[in-house]
Amino acid sequence: MISVVIPAHNEEKYIGKCLSAVKSAAKYVPDSVEMIVVANRCTDKTAAIAERFGAHVLNNEDKCIAAVRNTGVRAARGEIVVTIDADSLMTKYSLAEIKGNLESGVYVGGGTNPKFDRMSLGIAASTLYVAVNLIPVMFKNGGYLSGAMFWFRKSDFDAIGGFDETLVSLEDMEFAKRLKAHGKLSGRKYGTLKKSYVLTSARKFDEFGDWYLIKNRSLTKRIFTGRDRQAADEFYYDVR
Image (cartoon, rainbow, N blue to C red):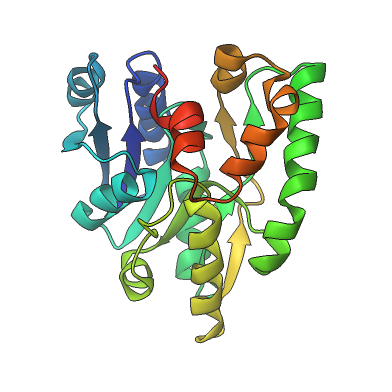
């Protein structure tokens, strides 16, 4: 079995599309695929829509994305686990490529490269600004590690203790660092899907403006610390 875990906070606009993409990708693997949606502080129809699509819905009230992710992964029945955000779409061969990578014994897991569903000069400039400012963090964490959609074996997730719940942001980068280090112990490497990618919404830019990250550089840098609760609430947890 392959388990796909999807954290969701008031995602009624996106969750159906996300689950439809998972179902399409499931057609290209012989395994059964379970979909787990972790409804985090939802006040809309996210849970009801997810259930209509056949997902197993869990509730979580934490203001901590690491805790939300951990809730879903720990409930997963599959040995192969994939995590993807509710506003993102995996491409149709994603699960097949992930299964092939993990069963090859070469990879401990990895991530995926994202593409925005729309682009503008402001989004391009903001993406470059974020990338430049994350370089010191990346070097601290062992170099570039892709994210967007994580894939790994549940046994390796358990071995490294899951996502760090002391972090309110950048938990994905920190998880990737530890997964990579864990893989080295058994001669496996951290990888990035080569054929598949994630199409993610530009809804943060829709909400805040395409130039917001550059205009509010102090907030952006505070988010990069991973531990600034006020900044994380303003940008992630208290929207929608």
